[in-house]
Amino acid sequence: MISDSLTVARSAFEEGTGWELKPEGACKGEICIPLATPPVGDTVQLDELADQLGLALVHDQDNDLWALGPAAPGGRALATAVAPNLTLPRLDGTTFELQSLRGSKVLMVAWSPY
Amino acid sequence: MWQALRNELHPHGLEVVTVGMDTAGAEACRHFIEAAKPEHPSLIDANHVVASQFGIINIPNSVWIDEDGMIVRPAEAAPAPPSIDVPRTNPFEGMTEFPDRAQAIMAEAVNIESDPAAYEAALRDWVTNGAESVYALSADQVIERSQPRSADTSTGAAHFAMAAHLEQAGKHDAAVPHFRQAHQLVPDNFAYRRQAWSLEPGGEGAFARFWQGPQDGNEEAWPYDSEWVSDVQAMGAANYYPKFTP
Image (cartoon, rainbow over the protein chains, first blue to last red):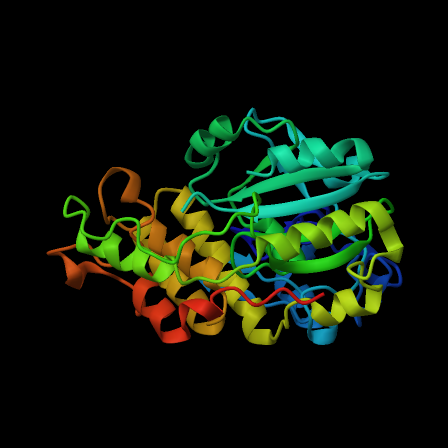
């Protein structure tokens, strides 16, 4: 996720990273990472959470922007075989959610026009 | 490309979802999608979210997901049907109207190995046999086969996200250093490289985004340490896509 501030809304962090902030820690699927200092209130500190969750945090000084990298619990891209609920627009701008295909087998193919 | 096979297998419970990854967004994908006329969901991914979430490092790549939303095959090379034998000769050979670089790209591209027949047979087996298919992996196998992700991979992904954001904000020159960092931190990620290279000026018309290297007569302006032809020559075109592993 990209932010112009280290202080972000709790909901923006959860949407941007896929980590849900619960009393027991930061959770994604069946995985929960306990937090030494669980955030309270409606805003969170990106640098504190990045530190505790092992997320990379990159700063662009000229543009004063922060970029948070993905977590890698277990050292693999996938920490669980539960498919993330990929949510992306179609060509016409309408939103599609992968979980709407529950009940079907899905072949997902990533491509690029270059 | 996947439309005919999708229509055949859709009544048997398979849906296809294609995801176009390009920081240039929907307009860059539009021509290809409209030509393919997909009846399946066809999505636009300007920030390579699918790559970050599923661990994709080159394109085209696929992920198989079962009826319960469980991944049964993690990201792997996905050669598109139809399963036809492509001759190992450069179709541009001797055609002087094509620039030298286009010839060099084609000379490598024809040696890229993939096995669309084996891939398609595996897909059909899974559609027929579901969890009983030898190609449907256990949750542990799926995690184990997904891409390794180190601290460098995560930092590289953050730089790539920053680059994509700056590129979309019209700050191309500010994006380049972050693309470079991503390339250096995650050297086996070819999707990062192809995306960055495709945004530099190169060939004309159809070659514009496939040029993927220095512009003729303007070589010193190339901002990256590598380019498609020499990278593929170094790794060997036959190793461009890992072999399909049942």
